[in-house]
Length: 338
Ligand code: PMP
Image (cartoon, rainbow, N blue to C red; front, side, top):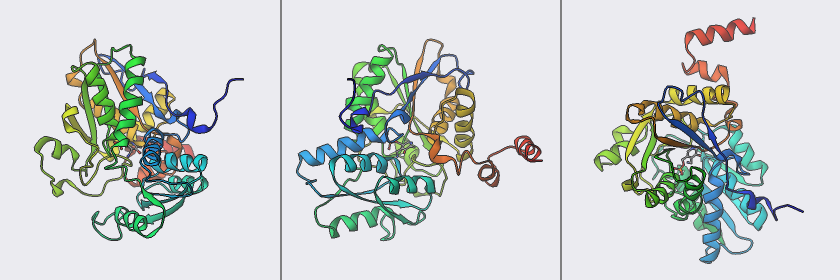
């Protein structure tokens, strides 16, 4: 018989898929590391399990304990899967910006989810950071995961995502493109690949409304860069500990509209039903195309699955209300409804 002992053993070893249409204007080959093949439908399964296992090893998480985290959903899903298999409870705090689908999915796998306001400072007692930290001090036998500063996050990508990309490209990868939030994916994966070949370029894709790119370029925490944006899972209003900025060669910002439009194109043109940040990653790559040569081999990480965005990016009404569909497309939709 060929089987795995539980669902956690199916994490990782995701396929590398050649992109044939959305990157046709680039001179080189582009491949997507399609992370929604993980059991929780996102790359975050990798680091979630790693963070739980390291906490167990350090004695921070004991049998029957409660896992607490501020999460936009994908990390929560990975943690919830680990909790189901390993017998822990989960409490997550998230923001009212996140898809309702994401919250419902977390509840479906047994987590308690507390929704907090988006537009407050991280230090505000109502923020999802503050609420999760407070719960961790109040609830006995609980472990506050803190994916931002928990370095097991980036270690998971150093141990898994980086080696997989190196193997799958036979060491031919020249560019790694990652839409970045906590910094775990880009730092861990980028660090591994650069140790293999220091000439590999690592490009970070940020969102307008985030201060990461400005921090990378100036070392300043410029709060003037920070304003509400819609793209989920990327960009920050602080710099998490998981970043090693020396791994990164370029930072590019993408608008909410360009990310959303490109996510829909990837789905329609490549048949890969991706989440929002995959659209941002490809849109950012296209913005940087002047630096690419025909012999380059680009790998772009696709973090999660489109099913979590059916009420948003994949909803025409939602797109129209935000001015993300152009007039011609809007007319087509209206005509189609007649
Ligand atoms: N895209 C999505 C959909 C995510 O959930 C995340 C995680 N915040 C990222 C991109 C960024 O990954 P990382 O946190 O490893 O930088």
